[in-house]
Image: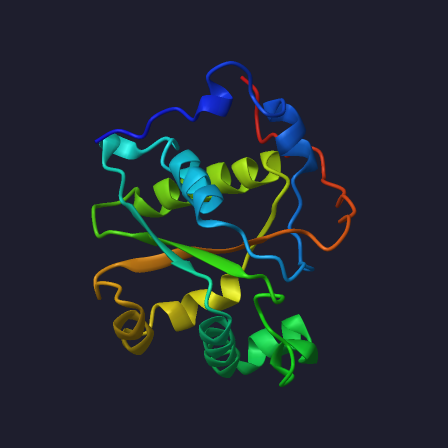
Length: 195
């Protein structure tokens, strides 16, 4: 079964692709408003349009919108932060009230199936598609790398119904942004050689 092209894209794109690339931000402040299932499905359909090595499509998606479950995962992830990472991140990441998901109402985790050497790259390409599509729909995202270790534990895989041989690579929060996020300056491309 193939993913059909959404009707909104059959005539014109929502926004120019370069605008999405340059204006998408990692957002860490969300409104309580939930993202509806149809929009989540639309974003997942955009994610699977990503390039994929040998056309393996090694990704699987886990969507969590249960706020109690998100809090549990947040607490579990905070408990696994090692002392070196704590020093690097600062103390607020381990404070009792801090939620690593910034109170976003949706977490989408991109898991990779054990298909070969390009799974990680394919999953991250799908993540970028999802983040750009979310921006095009007025939504915000942020990669939450601190969740990876917890999501890959056998206990959480069992609890979430994830096969043990799948690996969480890209946990992304999704939601309605609370306000504007300022752009972060980028360095010029570091070109090693141009021959």
